[in-house]
Image (cartoon, rainbow, N blue to C red; front, side, top):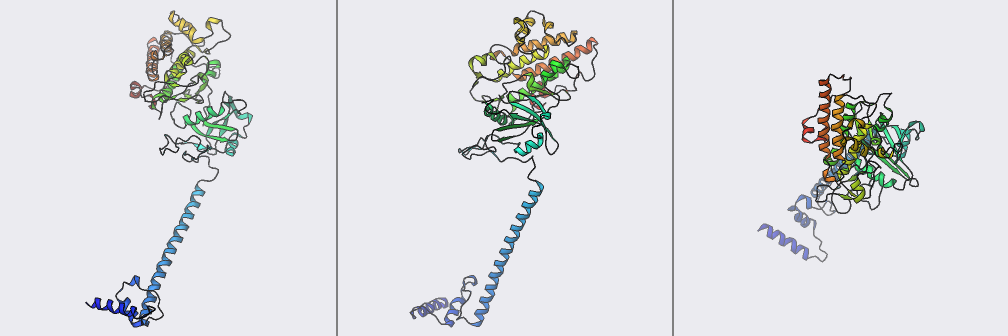
Length: 460
């Protein structure tokens, strides 16, 4: 009731004056029952007690404002200090920096050229885990592409030995200019896109890439012991690869290609399995290199093949793929069969200086095998023993199956790996049973695991 009388008094006092002005006593009475935060901060007509209350409220709000300002300043200074510490921890010339995730920018760039994103809102199917190098870093690593550091030349371009600031030794593949190789962009993008997806101990490791103007550069692991083809041609320090080591190399390649076909994020078909693309470490472990011709396979859907332009190396090409342009993982199996003949005979796939019936090494070797003269195929640098003869026949039989004219008749690469493990074990057992001298290091210490027997060769 008292509150109703007070509101009525205030309303009548407001309406009784034309300008809405109230006496100080009335104004003080009006704000006496209001919350403190809604009262006016200053009023010249207010009493001294009200002025003191207003002054205290003003001080309170000023204190709150000062506190917010101090908190904001402290936060800004801490952010600046954190940015300085991060900049000090990762200097500008650090070549191990990570590129941004590939995204859709409307135009290609060196850092987002291979992104799988786009405007659909879906996440890209993979992310780069390698470095994007600058031209200055590449020049510093290769001493301005010094001819003394050049270690090879291929269809893609020249290969240089380089050293990163952290001491890592790398191979720097410098692509040919477009005027010399009009397909350089396609091969470069294919190699970077594929190698960014894969990682296996029998595949050459990918460190990064650089694209600037006409320059296209891929940085990969440096494998110091040359190619398999070089070892088959001239050996290493006058010593040729023994038969047991050749079986080990074949097993390494089978593991690598099985991983590409079955265990990578998306099936990958190499399309260029050959001896010059197989690099050997100091311990004669094999690493598959050169993914310029590689292509993503059909995947797990209903598609059984990929229709594409024929690419590869003469002598290793799958004849069915050559005729139909239908690419499958069995095309790599055919090339692997040719490689097995190459390991056994040390002959190149095409021997232009031999008589006509022996020019195609794979056909000649299969004819000798069918005729029961498999021993004629053996590399003359290898000693003939009963153990070698038996292992050679088993190896040529596997090569014969791999090079079947129809892809459905060829084994999967995982089956090739298991067969090679069996051949290697039988060869070693035969050598020990026959009393043959086993040279130190002739057999590696590797043993087939449950992964090999189950087909999970990617774990090796």
